[in-house]
Amino acid sequence: MVGNEWRQVPVSFGAEHWVSRDTQATVLVAAHTLVSTQRLMDVVELIETDPRIQLIYSRAPAVLGAGVSEYLDSVGALQIPWAQAVRERFDLALSAAYAAIDELHAPVMAIQHGAAWGKRSGGTGQVYGLDAGRLLRDGKPIPTTLVLSHEADRRVLAEQCPEALSVARVAGDPCYDRMVASLPHRDEYRWALGVRAHSELIVIASTWGRHSLFGRLEQYLPELIKQLDPERHQVAMLVHPGVWAAHGRRQLRAWLSGARAAGLMLIDPELDWRVAAIAADYVVGDHGSTTAYAAAIGKPVLCADLPLEHLNPRSPQALLGMEAPRLVRAKPIEAQLRTAAAWLASQPDGSIAARLTSRPGEAHRLLREEMYRLLKMPAPGRHRAPEPVPVPDLVRR
Image (cartoon, rainbow, N blue to C red; front, side, top):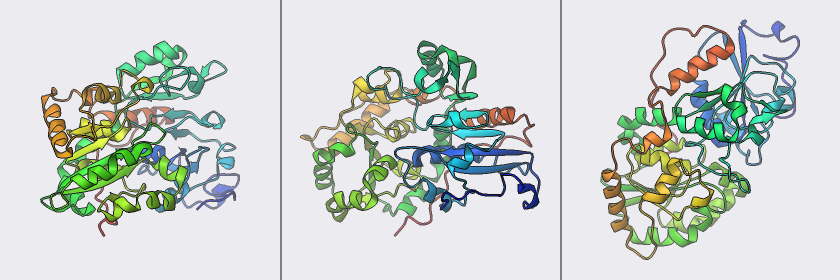
């Protein structure tokens, strides 16, 4: 894990004496949180095989940044301290959060780290992430390119921060596109998770914060596990990495020890959450991104009580909160799951996904083109289609 010691190679003065090959461009990946870093890995893959490009990673300042350096170590990423990153010059910087990116000496491409821009900021009521307070410095946009997934985001931006319209690019949602490409591998994901062949997998998905499902877990989890027949059902839980970062692994596992003893499968935060979402038969969730993505790829969802007043009314999270079936503790769970399936079947094909992206299937191509435009380099070869999420080999116990 990188500490405070600066690296002399492949950046810094005199690095040319130590490197084994010359490159034309150096790209910094600003890794704020585990969620934002995992999102960036989809984008990184579009340029990292280019022999002309050297990628460097740095853990950027973030309140919920625990686990980022360890994750980067696990994937073999070359890291430098943030204090060094803000003193070097790069040909491009990639980020899925805003904190401290105005300190970087590089054109910055900023992307969102979840499903749409789903939340409103407390106090202002503006859509979080598309507001002037985060996007501007001295009246000018901080990102060189602000990637949007939907044309509706551009309209929000026009209302909240018209100064940033000139740097906005609607490029779709690479996470959704990759989930669609991964659907044929569902059986492999289920095997890796240890799901029995004839079991229904119910995934409980929680975001972070006081309004999250995890924050009210005692209201739902014991009864849900109690009602579901373990011979026919398996229950897995996806907890936002921000919860793990804020409370600690030992504490979180201790809080869930009773449910785990009763059969709950707790998914580690480093695992690509999309594996569990694709493997699921049903998802019980809140206003987090996992719920929205699951519904968009055709998973029946039951929503816990959602804080609609804190959601962007144009977002897929708000759509589900207003229209999808609500989880009711006093009613039998299995019947509610069937109701969720019936509701999903009644929706027009692609209607939920249409809230996520205006460029379905195109995100990887558009993002790749934009990165090479910012690098002022020709893109090599032909664009490749999104690759499926790898089948994990360390999950099955």
